[in-house]
Structure formats: C-alpha cells, structure tokens
Length: 525
Length: 89
Image (cartoon, rainbow over all chains, first blue to last red; front, side):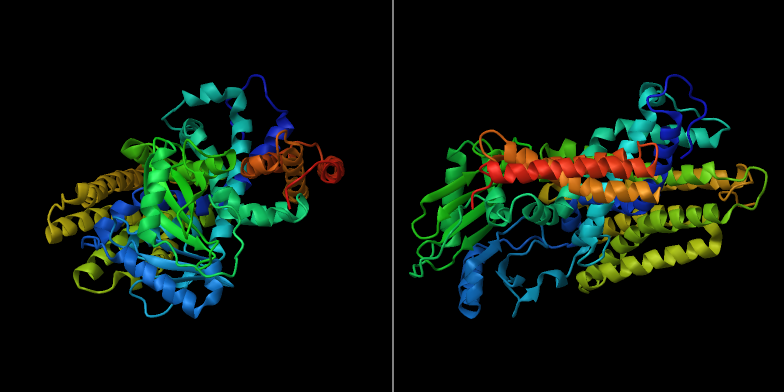
C-alpha cells in the first residue's frame, strides 16, 4: 500500500519512517495475507463447527449409556498391553454432535488414539476427518499435516506486525479514515477507504486473533524456549500444573483399583458446582499413574458465564479425595489466562449472538486481506497501458486463484459431502482430496481464463453451489428442524452466502465490462 | 529491509524472552503464579520489537541498539537467576 497522498497534517512518525512502515505493512500483508484469508474464511465457518457436523452427518448422535463403561474397559485393556500408558491415559466423553468420537488417548513415546470401535490404535495424525473437522483443520493448518500448525503460528506473528505497522501508518488520521468511504472514479481510494474502515473497526478483534492465534499454535515451542533461556530448565516439570488441576503425581508402585470414569465425572461436577462454577459440562478425563495407589483422575469441563469456559477438577483415583480445583471462580491467574486464550479465540463466552459476531467479523477479516491484495494491484497499475506489469498480473492470479479458489473449493467440498453421505459412501475418505483437487482446478482455471474472467466464474460457481447444496439437502432430508434446527440454520446460511457471492460476482462482472480497460480486471483489455 | 527484518526477528525474539523471563523472576509474591500471563505478554512484545527494528534510521543502528538491549537484559536475567528464588525445582 502506498502512502495516501491526500492526507496532510501533523505526522505521528517522520515521513521516511512512515514510508518504511508502509513497505513493512505491504510485505507482511503479502506474505501472510493468503494464509490469513483461508484461515479467516475457514475459521468463520468453524464458529459453527458442531452445526456443520450435524448438517454433514445426517444421523443422530449415538446416545448410549454404556459408552463411558466401554471407554473404561478399553483403558484397562490398553494399560495391560502398554504399561507405559499408565503415566497418562485419558478418554473423551460422549458429546452431542454426530462425528464426535469417544476415544482413548495415551502417551507412550508419542500420543496414540483408539476409538471404541477401532480394532487397534492409530497415530494422532491419521485421524480421518469429516467435513466440519476438515474445515476446522484447514483453519489452523491450511491442510498441511504436522508442520501446518507451526506455519500458522508464524503467520500469526507476521499478522501482528502487519497490524501494528498498519495502525502506526494510520494513527495520525484514524478518525478521519474511519468516516471516509469515497465511492467514485478513484478506485484505489475506494479500496483504500474500505480497507481502512474494516481494519480500524475490527482492530480489537484482529489484535485478539494475532495474539491468541500465535499462542495456540506456538505455546509449546515458546515454553521450550523459556525453559532453556530463562528458567534453568525448571519450567518443564511445572508445565502440566499450569494448565491442569492435578498436582504432580509420583507412583507408589502399590496397585489399587481405579475409580470408574462415571463416578469421577459425577464427583467432579459436584465439586465444580460447589466451588462456584456456573454449570460444569465434562468433555475429557485422564488418569495419571493409572492403577497406582497414588493415582489421580482429572476431569475437564465447560462452565458458563465466564470468558474462559474450560476448567478442571482433580481427584484421587482411588478414594475420590479432591486434589485440586481449577474452575471459574476458584482458579489462579495461570488457569484463568489459559482458559481465556481459548474462550477469546473460539468465541465461546457469549452464546449465539457472539458466535454470529465472530462469523461476520471472520468474513470481514477475509475481506480485509482480499482488499489488501486488490490495493497492492491497484497501486501498481499502469494507467496508460492495457498491458500490466508481471508482478501485478501474478498478484491478481494468485489472489483470485487462492482466495476465491478456496471459497469455491469449500463449496465443492460441501456438495461432495452431501453426495457421498446420500449415496452411503464414507465422506471422511473424500473431503480432503476433493478440496485440494477443486482448489487446484480453480487455480488452473484462473491461469487459463485470466483473473478478470476467472474471478467472475469462481464467484458465480461458489454462489451456485452454495444455493444448490442447501436446496439439495432440503430436498433429501426435509427442513430438519430437529436438534435445535442446526442443520436448517446451516442451509439458510448457505442460501445467504449464495446471495452474497452472487452480488460480488455481479459487481466484478460489471467492473470487467465497463470499468477502466487499463487494468488486470478488465475483460476487453 | 532484510537487515532490519533479521534484527527484529532474531534479536527481538531473544530480547522478548529475556524481558518476560526477567519480569517473571522479579514478580512480587512468586514467579510460578504469572507464568502463563507472561507467555501471553511475550507474543505481542515480540511483535512490537520486530516493528521497532523498522523505526531506526539505519539497519546497523537497529542491530546496534537491539544487541545492546539484549546484552543488558540477559545480564539482568543472569543476576536475577542467581539472586532471586526463581522457579521451584
């Protein structure tokens, strides 16, 4: 982005420094912008992860009272086969969306998982993902296994630097910029105004995501660095106690029978409520030193009316004595902060209204990064020639192919999931390959058709698929008002998104036909 | 750009760790209590220090001042590690 020349007045930083900050803002935006677009678009959808899951897997969740007992039996079997798992073994508790799995997790050199219906353990990474889980993993890994999450952590840091430099550039005329949206012949100014207005209005939201995003992705690595550089290697031993409720447990080597999970869950809930928590909805429990007389069982659960909903209660796994309580109203700064990081990032602290706000601000964030790229293109446009420089053409192709390409690829994946589920095919086998094939096809299409035409095509395609998938789902399954109407709400939102993408398509087509011909966005040029 | 970026990314990282580590060790009423808040502060501090490298007039000034700041911060951290109670072992 160039310095806006139309603004005079006192400068907060020297002109030369401001030019450098502008350059920094441009480059950090370029490096992180594409990843952030996908993260924000997929993240906005992931606000409604459970609703999308209910929509995508059209059968009610298995409600069975013996799931916890079967998990208990599986844990006993696993510690028999893998004695190292005794140090730490846990299970997820039954949930209320269909692809939620009750599974046992344990640590034996590496994390292992075994679902109740699995014959043998699997690695944590080869979990098959349904539609909702895939969109969510796209949000925080871009679909890249292993390293994706660290990559997104670095992207979050670059994003933070881009935010800071953007704010410093605009600080002297923050208020003027906020009320300026000047439609007219000067397209660059319009994009600049739109970019500034959205950037400033949603700044608190972006600050939250730059910081919590970096934390969630890189916290373990940061802890290692702090351990070595600042704390003489003493941090590692404390790490568990900073996020869980249990004190450090040492095995006595004397065996004892374990408190079964359903007893631990009931006791933990009673303890949490007595400590002042507003509700306690357990979703995970783990045993430390399973089978030993000193063993502990730690139950994690969610409470309401707090910024950080997660809390945990640790009990003796032999007699149920309370060993530690870290729930809202009864927790220290470490646990309150840790829970707040997730509460702020996932928007789980305020019910449906906050979830919609996160959804809309997420889409606005995606638009912010898209408009930043358009601004780059518009600032470097050759005004007197139909031929545009290579960097402008490359940027336009990448912006359309990757940003609009991933919107259309997600719509394709929703359709593929519907077709697979309706024809009895296992959708978890296809969502990931379908998404990447569709993204590659969209990119190829952009190269072939040039950005101006491809943008219109991809926007129409996304609009048409969003509408089609909602209509097809209603035709196949009816209105689906059961279960709080989650599936119906997904269909209505799909129709709303179809309207949004169609109006973007119309606007882009109009610009291609009748706008300035000396641009990558003109068809006639 | 590259010179400044490296100064910010490398020296900013070590400086941010030293400063937050120092704050934890000096925290009145026990270091363990503020470990997670300190890691939360570390990330925005790191971002600010990367940006700071771009506020100096030349890249070599950025390197010089940030290296000096690192030297002072790690010297203070070294003293704090040896004189204050620190984390329980």
